[in-house]
Every structure is written in structure tokens, then in C-alpha cells.
Length: 241
Image (cartoon, rainbow, N blue to C red; front, side):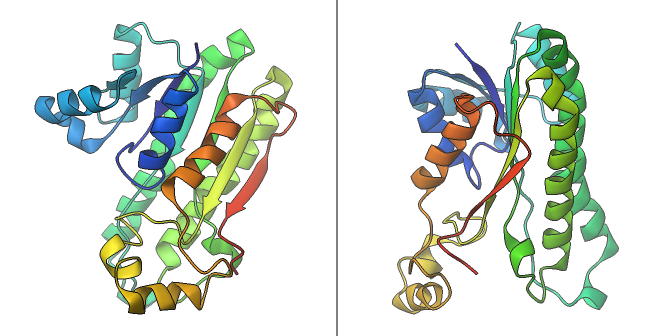
């Protein structure tokens, strides 16, 4: 049975991917900031049998908790999130850049450093990074998220070169126009006819991507069924741009 570590499981791609990874028989060790609260962690585990809510919040603390639980993680689904407020470049607080870098690049970088030695030693493991497809058509106001997520994509591609000799595939899922409350909330872009029209005018498929659709792609990349595929960026955008 494959053990997977997924970050920010209650956000972005997490809600769509977790049920499908559990359906595939994986044991899911899950990180989320809400799990600092024992009650929230317990409710989550009750809702998702087979999932373990980790209390740790930093990469090093996550590694320590996994070791204490005797977890042999073979797969990282790095599903990193940070709120984005569109602003002109000259108006962006530099602390916002630092915090975005910490959440979107440094966090997965450090987790990779922690998990990689055992994977290399065992010649077994997989990485799936969830970044963004905004690099295909950068938009005004989104310079921080676009540049840092593209940095994470570049990191994943560099990692793929280093892990290929060990049989460890590394791939990237790059969404845009995926329904999530963090980036495209239901009330504005699904329930509101004006919001739906706005999306339909931009996305060739005429709608936001569904979380379950995103989850199916994550599950395929996580499965290892196509191990020869590594260092790939798969855009999940409904035909945009």
C-alpha cells in the first residue's frame, strides 16, 4: 500500500484529490494549518477513513512526526497555497513576496530535502507538484504568484533530472481556472450568472475545472503507472489560454 504525503489538503487541489487517492488504496498523511487544532484533526480523520491528519506545520516538524508514526512515505503531493491579492508591482509589500516564497517554494523545497534520501536509497518514490499555468499568459497584478510558482515548476524539473537515475518520477500539474474557494470561489464564479459568463468568455470549455477532475489527474501522476514519464508539466486549464 502506497503512503502519500499531501500538503494543504483542505485547499486548492486537495479536496478533489484526497478522496480519489484514498479510493486508489493509498494511505494519506495529510498536512493542513487547521490540524493544529486537535478537534479539527479528529473531525477530518472521521470524514476521511484512511487519512491521517498530521499536527506538524513546518517541513522539519512534518518529517519528525512521520518518523514517529513509522510512516514510509513513497509519494509527495506538494499542493501549496498562498492568498493572492492582485496589485501593481510597485505596490506589493516586500513582506508579501517573502511570505509567498516561503509558502510556495521554500516549503516544498525543504520537504523534498527531507523525503528524498530515503527514496533514493530505496530506488522508489514519486513527486507531484501542484503549481500554476499562469506562466502561459502572465496577467497584470499577479506577478508574485506567477513568478514564484514558476520557480517551483523549475525546481521540480531540476529535481526530475536528479531523481531519474533512481527511478523516481517527478511531474507537475499546472492548473488555472480550477474551482477552489481560495482562488475561484463558488459564490462568484459558479452560482452567479455574471461570474459564469466571465469564465465562459475566457476558458474554451466554458466553465471552471471540477475538483474531482483535478483529482483524477493527480491520482494518475501519483500512481506510478507511467514511470517513464518524468519532468513533465501538464497544464490543466480547459483549453486556456
